Length: 236
Length: 381
Image (cartoon, rainbow over all chains, first blue to last red; front, side, top):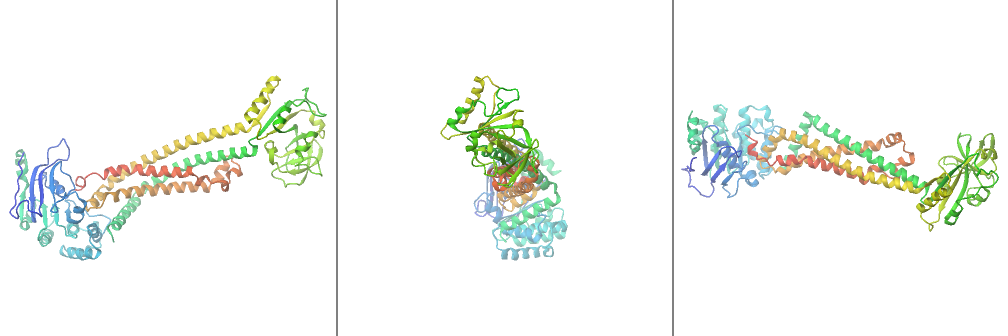
Protein backbone atom coordinates (compact mmCIF):
# COMPACT_ATOMS: atom_id res chain seq x y z
CA UNK A 1 0.00 0.00 0.00
CA UNK A 2 0.99 3.57 -0.45
CA UNK A 3 3.04 5.52 1.97
CA UNK A 4 1.59 8.66 3.44
CA UNK A 5 2.37 12.07 2.08
CA UNK A 6 1.41 15.68 2.37
CA UNK A 7 1.04 18.18 -0.34
CA UNK A 8 0.74 21.83 0.35
CA UNK A 9 2.19 25.08 -0.90
CA UNK A 10 -0.15 27.35 1.03
CA UNK A 11 1.13 27.08 4.56
CA UNK A 12 3.65 25.08 6.49
CA UNK A 13 2.59 21.70 7.72
CA UNK A 14 1.68 21.43 11.41
CA UNK A 15 1.03 25.09 11.67
CA UNK A 16 -1.70 25.90 14.19
CA UNK A 17 -5.03 26.45 12.47
CA UNK A 18 -4.73 23.50 10.10
CA UNK A 19 -6.96 20.46 9.92
CA UNK A 20 -4.62 17.52 10.11
CA UNK A 21 -4.70 13.77 9.77
CA UNK A 22 -2.04 11.54 11.19
CA UNK A 23 -1.69 7.86 10.26
CA UNK A 24 -5.43 7.54 9.63
CA UNK A 25 -6.90 4.17 8.69
CA UNK A 26 -10.51 3.57 7.87
CA UNK A 27 -12.65 0.80 6.41
CA UNK A 28 -16.41 0.33 6.59
CA UNK A 29 -16.37 -3.37 7.51
CA UNK A 30 -13.61 -5.45 9.07
CA UNK A 31 -13.48 -7.89 6.16
CA UNK A 32 -13.17 -5.10 3.57
CA UNK A 33 -9.92 -3.47 2.38
CA UNK A 34 -8.88 -0.11 3.83
CA UNK A 35 -10.60 2.82 2.19
CA UNK A 36 -8.26 5.25 3.89
CA UNK A 37 -4.89 3.69 4.45
CA UNK A 38 -2.26 5.27 6.69
CA UNK A 39 -3.19 8.75 5.55
CA UNK A 40 -1.25 11.69 6.89
CA UNK A 41 -1.92 15.18 5.68
CA UNK A 42 -2.44 18.69 6.92
CA UNK A 43 -5.09 20.91 5.36
CA UNK A 44 -4.12 24.56 5.75
CA UNK A 45 -6.47 27.58 5.43
CA UNK A 46 -7.70 28.17 1.89
CA UNK A 47 -9.67 26.19 -0.65
CA UNK A 48 -8.36 22.66 -1.20
CA UNK A 49 -9.83 20.61 -4.00
CA UNK A 50 -9.60 16.85 -3.59
CA UNK A 51 -9.72 15.10 -6.92
CA UNK A 52 -9.77 11.42 -7.59
CA UNK A 53 -11.55 8.49 -9.16
CA UNK A 54 -14.87 7.31 -7.85
CA UNK A 55 -14.44 5.04 -4.86
CA UNK A 56 -10.96 6.29 -4.02
CA UNK A 57 -12.15 7.49 -0.59
CA UNK A 58 -12.66 11.26 -1.11
CA UNK A 59 -16.12 11.33 0.47
CA UNK A 60 -15.02 9.00 3.26
CA UNK A 61 -12.14 11.35 4.05
CA UNK A 62 -14.52 14.33 4.24
CA UNK A 63 -16.79 12.41 6.65
CA UNK A 64 -13.81 11.53 8.77
CA UNK A 65 -12.75 15.19 8.82
CA UNK A 66 -16.30 16.11 9.86
CA UNK A 67 -16.37 13.53 12.64
CA UNK A 68 -19.29 11.74 11.00
CA UNK A 69 -17.12 8.63 10.83
CA UNK A 70 -14.53 7.60 13.37
CA UNK A 71 -11.13 6.35 12.12
CA UNK A 72 -10.18 2.76 12.91
CA UNK A 73 -6.72 4.03 13.74
CA UNK A 74 -4.87 7.32 13.64
CA UNK A 75 -5.71 10.82 14.78
CA UNK A 76 -7.53 13.71 13.17
CA UNK A 77 -7.03 17.10 14.78
CA UNK A 78 -9.23 20.10 14.10
CA UNK A 79 -7.85 23.65 13.93
CA UNK A 80 -9.10 23.96 17.50
CA UNK A 81 -6.83 21.12 18.63
CA UNK A 82 -9.75 18.82 19.31
CA UNK A 83 -11.28 15.75 17.70
CA UNK A 84 -13.77 16.29 14.89
CA UNK A 85 -16.34 14.17 16.73
CA UNK A 86 -16.68 16.91 19.35
CA UNK A 87 -20.23 18.21 19.25
CA UNK A 88 -19.07 21.79 19.76
CA UNK A 89 -16.89 21.57 16.64
CA UNK A 90 -19.75 20.09 14.62
CA UNK A 91 -22.25 22.66 15.84
CA UNK A 92 -20.20 25.85 15.66
CA UNK A 93 -17.16 25.44 13.50
CA UNK A 94 -18.09 22.91 10.85
CA UNK A 95 -20.17 23.31 7.73
CA UNK A 96 -20.85 20.24 5.62
CA UNK A 97 -22.52 19.91 2.26
CA UNK A 98 -23.43 16.36 1.37
CA UNK A 99 -23.29 14.91 -2.11
CA UNK A 100 -27.03 14.37 -2.07
CA UNK A 101 -29.40 17.20 -1.32
CA UNK A 102 -29.92 17.02 2.39
CA UNK A 103 -32.38 19.73 3.31
CA UNK A 104 -34.94 19.02 6.01
CA UNK A 105 -38.01 18.30 3.87
CA UNK A 106 -40.64 19.77 6.19
CA UNK A 107 -38.83 23.03 6.93
CA UNK A 108 -38.68 26.04 4.64
CA UNK A 109 -35.30 27.15 3.27
CA UNK A 110 -35.17 29.91 5.88
CA UNK A 111 -36.09 27.49 8.69
CA UNK A 112 -33.34 25.11 7.49
CA UNK A 113 -30.84 27.94 7.78
CA UNK A 114 -32.25 29.08 11.12
CA UNK A 115 -31.97 25.59 12.59
CA UNK A 116 -28.31 25.26 11.57
CA UNK A 117 -27.53 28.78 12.81
CA UNK A 118 -29.38 28.26 16.04
CA UNK A 119 -27.52 25.03 16.80
CA UNK A 120 -24.31 26.97 16.15
CA UNK A 121 -25.31 29.33 18.94
CA UNK A 122 -26.13 32.34 16.79
CA UNK A 123 -28.69 34.88 17.92
CA UNK A 124 -31.88 35.40 15.90
CA UNK A 125 -30.54 38.72 14.70
CA UNK A 126 -27.28 37.15 13.49
CA UNK A 127 -29.15 34.32 11.82
CA UNK A 128 -31.46 36.70 9.95
CA UNK A 129 -28.62 38.95 8.91
CA UNK A 130 -26.39 36.12 7.68
CA UNK A 131 -29.23 34.21 6.06
CA UNK A 132 -30.20 37.28 4.06
CA UNK A 133 -26.61 37.77 3.02
CA UNK A 134 -25.97 34.21 1.84
CA UNK A 135 -29.34 33.70 0.26
CA UNK A 136 -28.73 36.89 -1.68
CA UNK A 137 -25.17 35.95 -2.68
CA UNK A 138 -26.36 32.54 -3.84
CA UNK A 139 -29.34 34.06 -5.64
CA UNK A 140 -32.10 32.24 -3.76
CA UNK A 141 -33.48 34.91 -1.44
CA UNK A 142 -36.79 34.76 -3.30
CA UNK A 143 -37.18 31.13 -2.23
CA UNK A 144 -36.54 31.63 1.48
CA UNK A 145 -40.11 30.81 2.44
CA UNK A 146 -40.41 27.80 0.15
CA UNK A 147 -40.20 24.13 1.05
CA UNK A 148 -37.27 22.21 -0.52
CA UNK A 149 -39.52 20.04 -2.66
CA UNK A 150 -40.73 23.12 -4.57
CA UNK A 151 -37.17 24.07 -5.61
CA UNK A 152 -35.11 22.87 -8.56
CA UNK A 153 -31.98 20.75 -8.05
CA UNK A 154 -29.67 23.77 -8.49
CA UNK A 155 -31.71 25.91 -6.11
CA UNK A 156 -31.73 23.14 -3.52
CA UNK A 157 -27.96 22.75 -3.83
CA UNK A 158 -27.48 26.47 -3.33
CA UNK A 159 -29.84 26.38 -0.33
CA UNK A 160 -27.78 23.53 1.13
CA UNK A 161 -24.59 25.58 0.71
CA UNK A 162 -26.31 28.63 2.23
CA UNK A 163 -27.24 26.49 5.21
CA UNK A 164 -23.62 25.43 5.65
CA UNK A 165 -22.40 29.03 5.26
CA UNK A 166 -24.92 30.68 7.57
CA UNK A 167 -22.89 29.79 10.62
CA UNK A 168 -19.75 30.98 8.81
CA UNK A 169 -17.77 27.96 9.94
CA UNK A 170 -14.00 27.79 10.24
CA UNK A 171 -14.04 24.48 8.39
CA UNK A 172 -16.27 24.04 5.36
CA UNK A 173 -16.43 20.60 3.74
CA UNK A 174 -18.25 20.11 0.46
CA UNK A 175 -18.85 16.76 -1.16
CA UNK A 176 -19.43 17.11 -4.92
CA UNK A 177 -21.20 20.48 -4.52
CA UNK A 178 -21.62 21.08 -8.24
CA UNK A 179 -22.30 17.62 -9.59
CA UNK A 180 -25.08 17.76 -12.12
CA UNK A 181 -25.32 21.55 -12.01
CA UNK A 182 -25.17 23.85 -15.03
CA UNK A 183 -22.43 26.44 -15.53
CA UNK A 184 -24.47 29.28 -14.14
CA UNK A 185 -25.19 27.48 -10.85
CA UNK A 186 -21.54 26.37 -10.65
CA UNK A 187 -20.36 29.97 -11.18
CA UNK A 188 -22.67 31.26 -8.43
CA UNK A 189 -21.42 28.62 -6.00
CA UNK A 190 -17.75 29.19 -6.95
CA UNK A 191 -18.11 32.91 -6.40
CA UNK A 192 -19.78 32.43 -3.01
CA UNK A 193 -17.03 30.05 -1.88
CA UNK A 194 -14.26 32.36 -3.10
CA UNK A 195 -15.84 35.27 -1.22
CA UNK A 196 -16.24 33.23 1.91
CA UNK A 197 -12.85 31.55 2.22
CA UNK A 198 -10.64 34.29 3.60
CA UNK A 199 -8.21 34.45 6.48
CA UNK A 200 -7.93 31.25 8.51
CA UNK A 201 -10.96 29.53 7.04
CA UNK A 202 -10.47 26.07 5.60
CA UNK A 203 -12.60 24.86 2.72
CA UNK A 204 -12.14 21.33 1.41
CA UNK A 205 -14.06 20.34 -1.69
CA UNK A 206 -14.25 16.78 -2.90
CA UNK A 207 -15.05 16.89 -6.60
CA UNK A 208 -13.95 15.85 -10.04
CA UNK A 209 -15.58 18.92 -11.53
CA UNK A 210 -12.82 20.77 -13.38
CA UNK A 211 -14.86 23.97 -13.26
CA UNK A 212 -13.97 24.32 -9.58
CA UNK A 213 -10.19 24.14 -10.16
CA UNK A 214 -9.76 27.91 -10.74
CA UNK A 215 -10.94 28.77 -7.21
CA UNK A 216 -8.74 26.15 -5.50
CA UNK A 217 -5.59 27.27 -3.70
CA UNK A 218 -4.41 23.69 -3.66
CA UNK A 219 -5.39 20.49 -5.40
CA UNK A 220 -4.89 17.13 -3.76
CA UNK A 221 -4.88 14.23 -6.19
CA UNK A 222 -6.35 11.38 -4.21
CA UNK A 223 -5.56 8.85 -6.92
CA UNK A 224 -2.01 8.89 -5.61
CA UNK A 225 -3.21 7.06 -2.52
CA UNK A 226 -4.83 4.29 -4.48
CA UNK A 227 -3.15 0.87 -4.52
CA UNK A 228 -1.02 0.34 -7.65
CA UNK A 229 -3.41 -2.24 -9.04
CA UNK A 230 -6.25 0.33 -8.94
CA UNK A 231 -4.34 3.05 -10.78
CA UNK A 232 -5.14 1.60 -14.14
CA UNK A 233 -8.75 1.22 -13.13
CA UNK A 234 -8.80 4.86 -12.07
CA UNK A 235 -7.17 6.03 -15.31
CA UNK A 236 -9.74 4.12 -17.36
CA UNK B 1 -36.09 30.91 18.80
CA UNK B 2 -33.66 28.65 20.62
CA UNK B 3 -32.23 25.60 18.91
CA UNK B 4 -34.16 23.23 21.20
CA UNK B 5 -37.45 24.96 20.33
CA UNK B 6 -36.63 24.77 16.63
CA UNK B 7 -35.68 21.10 16.85
CA UNK B 8 -38.74 20.26 18.97
CA UNK B 9 -40.97 22.14 16.56
CA UNK B 10 -39.47 20.35 13.56
CA UNK B 11 -39.67 16.94 15.21
CA UNK B 12 -43.30 17.53 16.18
CA UNK B 13 -44.08 18.52 12.60
CA UNK B 14 -42.25 15.43 11.37
CA UNK B 15 -44.15 13.19 13.79
CA UNK B 16 -47.48 14.73 12.88
CA UNK B 17 -46.77 14.30 9.16
CA UNK B 18 -45.84 10.66 9.70
CA UNK B 19 -49.05 10.04 11.65
CA UNK B 20 -51.06 11.79 8.98
CA UNK B 21 -49.43 9.87 6.14
CA UNK B 22 -49.53 6.53 7.92
CA UNK B 23 -52.45 6.64 10.34
CA UNK B 24 -52.19 2.87 10.78
CA UNK B 25 -49.03 3.37 12.84
CA UNK B 26 -50.49 5.46 15.70
CA UNK B 27 -53.86 3.72 15.43
CA UNK B 28 -52.29 0.28 15.74
CA UNK B 29 -50.43 1.39 18.84
CA UNK B 30 -53.55 2.98 20.33
CA UNK B 31 -55.66 -0.08 19.58
CA UNK B 32 -53.19 -2.65 20.88
CA UNK B 33 -52.48 -0.70 24.06
CA UNK B 34 -56.15 0.10 24.63
CA UNK B 35 -57.16 -3.52 24.19
CA UNK B 36 -54.42 -4.89 26.44
CA UNK B 37 -55.09 -2.32 29.16
CA UNK B 38 -58.84 -2.94 28.88
CA UNK B 39 -58.47 -6.69 29.35
CA UNK B 40 -55.92 -6.33 32.15
CA UNK B 41 -57.98 -3.72 33.99
CA UNK B 42 -61.19 -5.73 33.56
CA UNK B 43 -59.55 -8.82 35.06
CA UNK B 44 -58.15 -6.87 37.99
CA UNK B 45 -61.49 -5.12 38.57
CA UNK B 46 -63.25 -8.51 38.57
CA UNK B 47 -60.81 -9.67 41.24
CA UNK B 48 -61.43 -6.49 43.18
CA UNK B 49 -65.20 -6.95 42.97
CA UNK B 50 -64.96 -10.61 43.96
CA UNK B 51 -62.87 -9.64 46.93
CA UNK B 52 -65.31 -6.91 47.89
CA UNK B 53 -68.18 -9.35 47.46
CA UNK B 54 -66.51 -11.86 49.77
CA UNK B 55 -65.71 -9.15 52.27
CA UNK B 56 -69.30 -8.05 52.21
CA UNK B 57 -70.45 -11.63 52.80
CA UNK B 58 -67.94 -11.97 55.59
CA UNK B 59 -69.10 -8.75 57.22
CA UNK B 60 -72.68 -9.87 56.89
CA UNK B 61 -71.94 -13.33 58.30
CA UNK B 62 -69.71 -12.17 61.14
CA UNK B 63 -66.37 -13.60 62.12
CA UNK B 64 -67.65 -15.33 65.27
CA UNK B 65 -70.83 -16.85 63.93
CA UNK B 66 -71.47 -20.54 63.28
CA UNK B 67 -74.64 -21.74 61.59
CA UNK B 68 -75.59 -25.40 62.10
CA UNK B 69 -78.39 -27.00 60.08
CA UNK B 70 -79.79 -30.48 60.49
CA UNK B 71 -82.81 -31.99 58.74
CA UNK B 72 -85.55 -33.54 60.80
CA UNK B 73 -87.87 -35.63 58.61
CA UNK B 74 -91.50 -36.64 59.45
CA UNK B 75 -90.42 -40.22 60.25
CA UNK B 76 -87.67 -39.09 62.60
CA UNK B 77 -87.89 -39.80 66.35
CA UNK B 78 -86.68 -36.30 66.89
CA UNK B 79 -89.78 -34.78 65.35
CA UNK B 80 -91.36 -33.40 68.49
CA UNK B 81 -93.90 -30.70 67.79
CA UNK B 82 -94.96 -29.97 71.33
CA UNK B 83 -91.88 -28.54 72.90
CA UNK B 84 -88.22 -29.05 72.05
CA UNK B 85 -86.28 -32.23 71.36
CA UNK B 86 -82.94 -32.97 73.05
CA UNK B 87 -80.38 -30.26 72.41
CA UNK B 88 -77.04 -31.87 71.52
CA UNK B 89 -75.45 -28.51 71.04
CA UNK B 90 -76.29 -27.36 74.56
CA UNK B 91 -72.59 -27.35 75.62
CA UNK B 92 -72.04 -24.52 73.15
CA UNK B 93 -74.08 -22.19 75.37
CA UNK B 94 -71.06 -21.93 77.66
CA UNK B 95 -69.00 -20.41 74.86
CA UNK B 96 -71.52 -17.89 73.53
CA UNK B 97 -75.15 -17.24 72.77
CA UNK B 98 -77.19 -19.73 70.84
CA UNK B 99 -80.60 -19.56 69.19
CA UNK B 100 -82.38 -22.74 68.13
CA UNK B 101 -84.98 -22.30 65.39
CA UNK B 102 -86.92 -24.55 63.06
CA UNK B 103 -87.05 -23.79 59.37
CA UNK B 104 -90.25 -25.26 58.00
CA UNK B 105 -90.61 -26.91 54.62
CA UNK B 106 -93.43 -24.53 53.70
CA UNK B 107 -93.27 -20.99 52.36
CA UNK B 108 -95.37 -17.97 53.20
CA UNK B 109 -96.85 -15.28 50.96
CA UNK B 110 -97.26 -11.56 51.38
CA UNK B 111 -98.65 -8.96 49.07
CA UNK B 112 -95.14 -8.35 47.72
CA UNK B 113 -93.31 -11.63 48.24
CA UNK B 114 -94.48 -15.08 47.19
CA UNK B 115 -91.82 -17.20 48.79
CA UNK B 116 -91.10 -16.19 52.36
CA UNK B 117 -88.97 -18.60 54.38
CA UNK B 118 -90.73 -19.57 57.59
CA UNK B 119 -89.04 -20.27 60.96
CA UNK B 120 -90.48 -21.01 64.35
CA UNK B 121 -88.89 -20.11 67.66
CA UNK B 122 -89.24 -21.84 71.02
CA UNK B 123 -90.48 -20.11 74.12
CA UNK B 124 -87.06 -20.07 75.76
CA UNK B 125 -85.73 -18.03 72.84
CA UNK B 126 -87.88 -15.03 73.67
CA UNK B 127 -85.13 -13.26 75.57
CA UNK B 128 -82.76 -13.71 72.62
CA UNK B 129 -85.32 -12.22 70.25
CA UNK B 130 -86.49 -9.51 72.61
CA UNK B 131 -84.75 -6.78 70.58
CA UNK B 132 -86.90 -7.66 67.58
CA UNK B 133 -90.24 -8.43 69.20
CA UNK B 134 -93.01 -5.88 69.71
CA UNK B 135 -96.17 -5.69 71.73
CA UNK B 136 -98.33 -5.75 68.61
CA UNK B 137 -97.38 -9.26 67.49
CA UNK B 138 -95.13 -12.17 68.49
CA UNK B 139 -94.16 -12.70 64.80
CA UNK B 140 -91.17 -11.07 63.19
CA UNK B 141 -90.71 -10.40 59.51
CA UNK B 142 -87.02 -9.89 58.62
CA UNK B 143 -86.64 -7.88 55.41
CA UNK B 144 -84.10 -5.51 53.88
CA UNK B 145 -86.60 -3.99 51.48
CA UNK B 146 -89.89 -3.42 53.33
CA UNK B 147 -90.21 -0.36 55.60
CA UNK B 148 -88.98 -1.05 59.10
CA UNK B 149 -91.60 -1.47 61.86
CA UNK B 150 -94.41 -1.86 59.31
CA UNK B 151 -96.98 -4.56 60.02
CA UNK B 152 -97.39 -7.07 57.18
CA UNK B 153 -99.91 -9.81 56.69
CA UNK B 154 -98.31 -13.17 55.90
CA UNK B 155 -100.24 -16.22 54.74
CA UNK B 156 -98.87 -19.73 55.31
CA UNK B 157 -101.06 -22.53 53.95
CA UNK B 158 -104.23 -20.39 54.19
CA UNK B 159 -103.38 -19.42 57.76
CA UNK B 160 -102.78 -15.69 58.08
CA UNK B 161 -100.83 -13.78 60.69
CA UNK B 162 -99.49 -10.29 61.18
CA UNK B 163 -95.77 -9.75 61.64
CA UNK B 164 -93.71 -6.65 62.25
CA UNK B 165 -90.94 -5.80 59.81
CA UNK B 166 -87.46 -5.74 61.31
CA UNK B 167 -84.04 -5.28 59.81
CA UNK B 168 -81.90 -8.40 60.01
CA UNK B 169 -79.07 -6.78 61.91
CA UNK B 170 -76.69 -7.97 64.55
CA UNK B 171 -75.86 -11.57 65.24
CA UNK B 172 -78.94 -12.98 63.44
CA UNK B 173 -77.84 -11.42 60.15
CA UNK B 174 -76.06 -14.61 58.85
CA UNK B 175 -79.28 -16.63 58.80
CA UNK B 176 -81.14 -14.05 56.72
CA UNK B 177 -80.41 -14.19 53.02
CA UNK B 178 -83.92 -13.35 51.90
CA UNK B 179 -87.19 -12.21 53.54
CA UNK B 180 -88.05 -14.53 56.46
CA UNK B 181 -90.94 -14.92 58.87
CA UNK B 182 -90.34 -16.06 62.44
CA UNK B 183 -93.34 -17.18 64.44
CA UNK B 184 -93.66 -18.83 67.88
CA UNK B 185 -93.57 -22.62 67.90
CA UNK B 186 -97.08 -24.09 67.87
CA UNK B 187 -98.47 -21.39 65.59
CA UNK B 188 -98.02 -23.65 62.54
CA UNK B 189 -98.34 -27.10 64.12
CA UNK B 190 -99.52 -28.93 60.98
CA UNK B 191 -96.65 -27.54 59.01
CA UNK B 192 -94.13 -28.52 61.68
CA UNK B 193 -95.32 -32.11 61.48
CA UNK B 194 -94.09 -32.21 57.87
CA UNK B 195 -90.56 -31.93 59.16
CA UNK B 196 -88.14 -29.04 59.42
CA UNK B 197 -84.53 -28.01 59.44
CA UNK B 198 -83.21 -27.61 62.95
CA UNK B 199 -81.23 -24.41 62.65
CA UNK B 200 -78.85 -23.24 65.34
CA UNK B 201 -77.32 -19.79 65.20
CA UNK B 202 -74.33 -19.61 67.49
CA UNK B 203 -72.25 -16.56 68.26
CA UNK B 204 -69.00 -17.26 70.00
CA UNK B 205 -67.83 -15.14 72.93
CA UNK B 206 -64.59 -13.29 72.10
CA UNK B 207 -62.70 -15.20 74.81
CA UNK B 208 -64.09 -18.63 73.85
CA UNK B 209 -62.22 -21.27 71.89
CA UNK B 210 -61.48 -20.48 68.22
CA UNK B 211 -64.18 -20.92 65.59
CA UNK B 212 -62.16 -23.67 63.91
CA UNK B 213 -62.21 -25.73 67.12
CA UNK B 214 -65.92 -25.17 67.60
CA UNK B 215 -66.59 -26.38 64.03
CA UNK B 216 -64.43 -29.47 64.65
CA UNK B 217 -66.19 -30.16 67.94
CA UNK B 218 -69.63 -29.96 66.34
CA UNK B 219 -68.61 -32.28 63.52
CA UNK B 220 -67.08 -34.72 66.01
CA UNK B 221 -70.29 -34.68 68.04
CA UNK B 222 -72.33 -35.82 65.06
CA UNK B 223 -69.81 -38.56 64.24
CA UNK B 224 -69.84 -39.82 67.84
CA UNK B 225 -73.65 -39.94 67.84
CA UNK B 226 -73.53 -41.78 64.49
CA UNK B 227 -75.85 -39.27 62.95
CA UNK B 228 -75.88 -37.76 59.51
CA UNK B 229 -73.40 -34.87 59.67
CA UNK B 230 -75.03 -31.49 60.06
CA UNK B 231 -74.34 -28.66 57.67
CA UNK B 232 -71.97 -26.37 59.55
CA UNK B 233 -71.38 -22.92 58.13
CA UNK B 234 -68.82 -20.51 59.53
CA UNK B 235 -66.63 -17.61 58.48
CA UNK B 236 -63.68 -20.00 58.05
CA UNK B 237 -64.73 -21.04 54.57
CA UNK B 238 -65.16 -17.42 53.50
CA UNK B 239 -61.80 -16.43 54.96
CA UNK B 240 -60.13 -19.36 53.18
CA UNK B 241 -61.84 -18.37 49.94
CA UNK B 242 -60.75 -14.76 50.45
CA UNK B 243 -57.15 -15.75 51.02
CA UNK B 244 -57.13 -17.96 47.92
CA UNK B 245 -58.62 -15.11 45.90
CA UNK B 246 -55.96 -12.68 47.09
CA UNK B 247 -53.25 -15.19 46.24
CA UNK B 248 -54.69 -15.72 42.76
CA UNK B 249 -55.05 -11.97 42.34
CA UNK B 250 -51.37 -11.44 43.11
CA UNK B 251 -50.40 -14.18 40.62
CA UNK B 252 -52.63 -12.70 37.95
CA UNK B 253 -51.32 -9.23 38.58
CA UNK B 254 -47.77 -10.41 37.91
CA UNK B 255 -48.78 -12.43 34.84
CA UNK B 256 -50.80 -9.54 33.41
CA UNK B 257 -48.04 -7.05 34.09
CA UNK B 258 -45.53 -9.29 32.31
CA UNK B 259 -47.81 -9.89 29.31
CA UNK B 260 -48.66 -6.22 29.08
CA UNK B 261 -45.09 -4.96 29.27
CA UNK B 262 -43.76 -7.60 26.89
CA UNK B 263 -46.54 -7.22 24.32
CA UNK B 264 -46.22 -3.46 24.28
CA UNK B 265 -42.44 -3.63 24.01
CA UNK B 266 -42.67 -6.01 21.07
CA UNK B 267 -45.42 -4.17 19.20
CA UNK B 268 -44.06 -0.69 19.83
CA UNK B 269 -40.50 -1.87 19.30
CA UNK B 270 -41.35 -3.38 15.91
CA UNK B 271 -43.17 -0.21 14.84
CA UNK B 272 -40.36 1.96 16.20
CA UNK B 273 -37.73 0.00 14.23
CA UNK B 274 -39.74 0.24 11.02
CA UNK B 275 -40.36 3.94 11.46
CA UNK B 276 -36.84 4.64 12.57
CA UNK B 277 -35.53 3.17 9.34
CA UNK B 278 -37.80 5.56 7.50
CA UNK B 279 -36.66 8.47 9.64
CA UNK B 280 -33.03 7.53 9.79
CA UNK B 281 -32.19 10.14 7.18
CA UNK B 282 -33.80 13.08 9.02
CA UNK B 283 -32.31 11.95 12.32
CA UNK B 284 -28.84 11.68 10.77
CA UNK B 285 -29.22 15.06 9.12
CA UNK B 286 -30.16 16.73 12.40
CA UNK B 287 -27.24 15.00 14.08
CA UNK B 288 -24.94 16.26 11.33
CA UNK B 289 -25.85 19.82 12.41
CA UNK B 290 -24.86 18.92 15.93
CA UNK B 291 -28.36 18.20 17.28
CA UNK B 292 -27.89 16.03 20.38
CA UNK B 293 -29.01 12.41 19.77
CA UNK B 294 -30.89 12.51 23.08
CA UNK B 295 -33.38 14.93 21.48
CA UNK B 296 -34.10 12.41 18.77
CA UNK B 297 -34.32 9.58 21.28
CA UNK B 298 -36.68 11.53 23.52
CA UNK B 299 -38.88 12.22 20.53
CA UNK B 300 -39.45 8.48 20.09
CA UNK B 301 -39.80 7.89 23.82
CA UNK B 302 -42.27 10.75 24.18
CA UNK B 303 -44.26 9.66 21.15
CA UNK B 304 -44.56 6.09 22.45
CA UNK B 305 -45.32 7.20 26.00
CA UNK B 306 -47.92 9.70 24.77
CA UNK B 307 -49.76 7.12 22.65
CA UNK B 308 -49.49 4.38 25.28
CA UNK B 309 -50.74 6.54 28.15
CA UNK B 310 -53.50 8.07 26.04
CA UNK B 311 -54.74 4.63 25.01
CA UNK B 312 -54.33 3.23 28.52
CA UNK B 313 -56.16 6.08 30.23
CA UNK B 314 -58.94 6.05 27.64
CA UNK B 315 -59.40 2.28 28.11
CA UNK B 316 -59.57 2.66 31.89
CA UNK B 317 -61.94 5.63 31.62
CA UNK B 318 -64.20 3.70 29.21
CA UNK B 319 -64.31 0.72 31.56
CA UNK B 320 -65.05 2.98 34.54
CA UNK B 321 -67.82 4.68 32.56
CA UNK B 322 -69.43 1.33 31.68
CA UNK B 323 -68.64 -0.20 35.10
CA UNK B 324 -72.22 -0.69 36.21
CA UNK B 325 -73.41 -2.10 32.89
CA UNK B 326 -70.51 -4.51 32.28
CA UNK B 327 -70.05 -5.88 35.77
CA UNK B 328 -73.76 -5.71 36.59
CA UNK B 329 -74.30 -8.09 33.65
CA UNK B 330 -71.73 -10.41 35.19
CA UNK B 331 -73.94 -10.68 38.26
CA UNK B 332 -72.28 -8.43 40.83
CA UNK B 333 -74.69 -6.84 43.31
CA UNK B 334 -75.33 -3.10 43.42
CA UNK B 335 -73.67 -2.83 46.82
CA UNK B 336 -70.46 -4.35 45.45
CA UNK B 337 -70.58 -2.26 42.28
CA UNK B 338 -70.95 1.02 44.16
CA UNK B 339 -67.78 2.99 43.35
CA UNK B 340 -68.26 5.23 46.39
CA UNK B 341 -67.29 2.30 48.59
CA UNK B 342 -63.93 2.07 46.81
CA UNK B 343 -62.93 2.89 43.26
CA UNK B 344 -60.88 0.07 41.69
CA UNK B 345 -59.97 2.37 38.78
CA UNK B 346 -58.01 4.61 41.13
CA UNK B 347 -56.40 1.74 42.96
CA UNK B 348 -52.66 0.90 43.05
CA UNK B 349 -53.38 -2.03 40.70
CA UNK B 350 -54.44 0.39 37.96
CA UNK B 351 -51.32 2.44 38.56
CA UNK B 352 -49.27 -0.75 38.21
CA UNK B 353 -50.91 -1.35 34.80
CA UNK B 354 -50.02 2.19 33.72
CA UNK B 355 -46.48 1.71 35.03
CA UNK B 356 -46.10 -1.40 32.87
CA UNK B 357 -47.52 0.47 29.91
CA UNK B 358 -44.76 3.04 30.37
CA UNK B 359 -42.13 0.36 30.88
CA UNK B 360 -43.29 -1.18 27.59
CA UNK B 361 -43.03 2.23 25.90
CA UNK B 362 -39.53 2.68 27.30
CA UNK B 363 -38.34 -0.79 26.27
CA UNK B 364 -39.69 -0.23 22.76
CA UNK B 365 -37.54 2.88 22.41
CA UNK B 366 -34.29 0.99 23.10
CA UNK B 367 -33.80 -0.11 19.46
CA UNK B 368 -33.98 3.58 18.51
CA UNK B 369 -31.34 4.40 21.11
CA UNK B 370 -29.06 1.77 19.57
CA UNK B 371 -29.88 3.01 16.06
CA UNK B 372 -28.85 6.53 17.01
CA UNK B 373 -25.36 5.26 17.76
CA UNK B 374 -24.87 4.53 14.07
CA UNK B 375 -22.37 7.04 12.62
CA UNK B 376 -23.93 9.87 10.62
CA UNK B 377 -21.39 9.33 7.87
CA UNK B 378 -22.62 5.82 7.20
CA UNK B 379 -26.20 7.04 6.73
CA UNK B 380 -25.90 10.28 4.76
CA UNK B 381 -24.34 10.42 1.32
